[in-house]
Length: 320
Image (cartoon, rainbow, N blue to C red; front, side, top):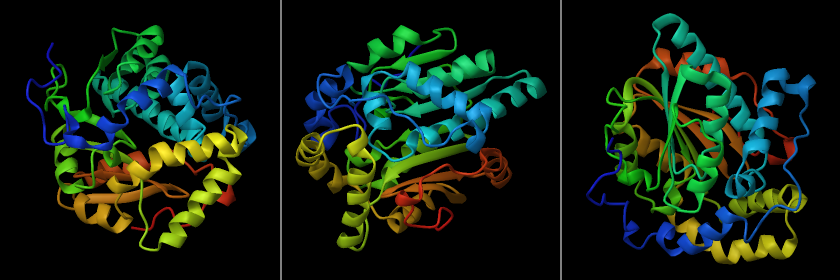
C-alpha cells in the first residue's frame, strides 16, 4: 500500500529550507523527551461536572497514551487537551453513528500529528467504526505510535503531510475528517497553496479542521497573548528558563510561517465553500472548513461548548 509520494511536493520532502527542516533535530529531541519534557502531567481545571463524563475520560486517555512530543504539545497550548477531547468525542460519536447507518468506517487523517495520540485514542474509543492515518516528518515519533496503536485500524506514515499522496492508498474516496495539527506554519506562509494540498485529500462531504497559531496585525497584541500563554499556563509545566529557551530556539523561526486570521480566511475561501472558527486560545485558533454546509453544521453541532479558562480568551470563537 503506497501512501508516500515518490516526488517532492513544493513544501514537502526536503522542505525547501523551511523551519521544519531547520528545526528537525530539535523536534526529534522533543519527540524522545530529551529536552522540554513537562515537569508534571497536564491536568485540567475542568472536571466531569464541567464537561461531562465522556470528555473528562477522553482527557485522561489522551494523557495516558501520549508520547513525549504530544505531552509537550498539551503543556504548551492553553486548554488544547480539553479541546482535543471535545473534537475527539464528537468524532467518535460521528464514527459510531456512521457505522450504524452505513456500515462504513469514518476515515480520519491527522496531518503532522506527532506520535498520533489523538488517532490512537479515537481508535480505542470507536474501534472498527474509524480508520485513521497519521503522518509525521520526525522519525522519533513512529516508535511511540506503534507502541500503543491498533495496526488494523490505525496507520502511520513517516513523512511530511506534503509527501502523502492524494488520494492516499486505502482512502481513495477521501477523508471524512482531516485535522491539521499546527503544522503549516513550519512550511512557510503560503496558505493558498498549502490548503490546496489539504483539500485534495478531503471527501466531497468531508470536514477539515485547521489548528493554527495566527499572527496579528498588532505586534503588541500578539505579544500580550504570548505572555498570557507563557506566564499563566506554561509555567505550570516548564521553568522560565525552558520557556525562554524555546522562544529563542523555536518560536522566532516559527513566526515567519504564521499568517493572520484574515489572511487564513482569504486563502481558505479559495478551496472551501464554508468556513467557521470553532475555538480560540491566546494566538491559537481552530478553523473548520468544508464544501458541504450540512456536513460542517452537523459536525459543529456535535462539539458542545468549549472548555477554556478565561485568561486565554482574547477573541470571539466564531469571529471570521
